[in-house]
Amino acid sequence: MSMKVLVSGDAEGNLAALFKKVEAVNNKAGPFDMLLCVGSFFGPGNLGWQDYKSGRCKVPLPVYILGPNKHEDVACFPDIEGSELCENVVYLGRQGAFTTNEGLKIAYLSGVQSEDPLMAKEYNYSVQNLQSLESSLRWDDSRYAGVDILLTSDWPKGISNRATQTSSVRDLEIGSALVSRVALLSRPRYHFCGLQGEHYERAPYRNHQSGAEMARHVTRFIALGKVGNKEKKKWLYAFNMTPLKAMERSELVTQPQGLTDIPFLPEHIQI
Image 1 (cartoon, rainbow, N blue to C red):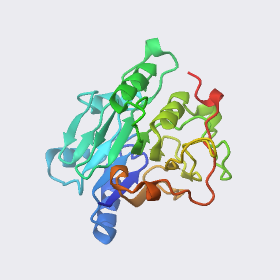
Image 2 (image 1 turned 90 degrees about the horizontal axis):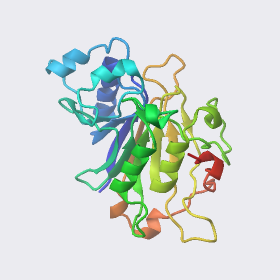
Image 3 (image 1 turned 90 degrees about the vertical axis):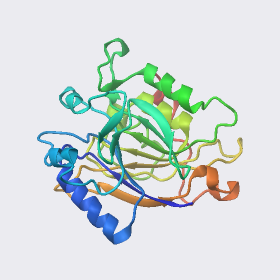
């Protein structure tokens, strides 16, 4: 069964604009099954949030968001481990995975990487979160097949390696080695991130060593801009997706033109 999915970049509290646009797209091209939000959902003012929280305004479809990326936003999350924030808006939690009724498997890692694991705050992730994610996904199992979607706020370090498309984001400097490791081990079909205000779609990359390993599905990496940005960088992405578990292997491992080898080198995943 194919699902219709929307993904947005950082709303940064510009929630009325986000939901107005989503409702218009849903009415025109939907119905969509869900909206996934990467980056910072809350921000200064959180314009209109109380109207949605009180029920005066309705969120147009199920929305799943990541957690805080800075101290100022922590108060917007009553339970840092995950909770429903209002009708149709669910904060997923610090890390984990869930499967929709249709079989779509979505993994996520909230927050920004902690420079010192011993000093990690509620808006940080560290090696411990990576270990928890591994426990839930069990990517060390030989039967592990991957996930359909990976959501992070941070960019992965080294994602631009081997890519012909350039980006203004210096991922080797600001990218996270932990996110690179998660992407490498979890093998998502799509990986979305935000925070840097940049729209960047990388060429798909292989999840196997060409000629040395059995073919696997490819990963498409997409970074999204901020909601309503003046530069008109793309911040809302719409696509159809059939869950991995419902696809024939021959279709799943189709290798599109223009793909590259895995971008991550040992120095990109060193933690």
